[in-house]
Length: 179
Ligand SMILES: [Zn+2]
Image (cartoon, rainbow, N blue to C red; front, side, top):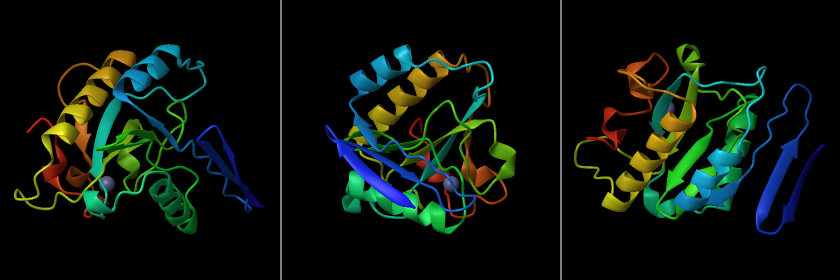
């Protein structure tokens, strides 16, 4: 049984179909709100403690981003693959979209990236000509810095690209907002 409930612009979705039980938060935040959210977020010892950050990008162009509607689209897509988890965050020009809880393990097609917070930067970045807007670049950089501080993720090679791992063929190296 699936149900969707909307309360105060906060769309909470939950689905229970056999083994599949992916909860999505579908919550949009400004950078400032995301910063406060991280300050208040508690992670219990038995919950997920990320060790790295992994960057992805969407297959759809940034112009087709529809916020909540896009979140639900991805939720349906991942459910159709039988996934119990998805990426944690989507970063779009209109804010930081929390997709699944940060204190739960996320999922990608690469098992080697189980220890990561998974971030999808909205847009297609398949070639060096697919330019990320300065606005989106800056927002992405700030989100990554906030997450590194929150989880004490410091040192080299702590921000990785899905494209560098098996299963990451649909993601590109041009998604890096620090380049
Ligand atoms: Zn990816």
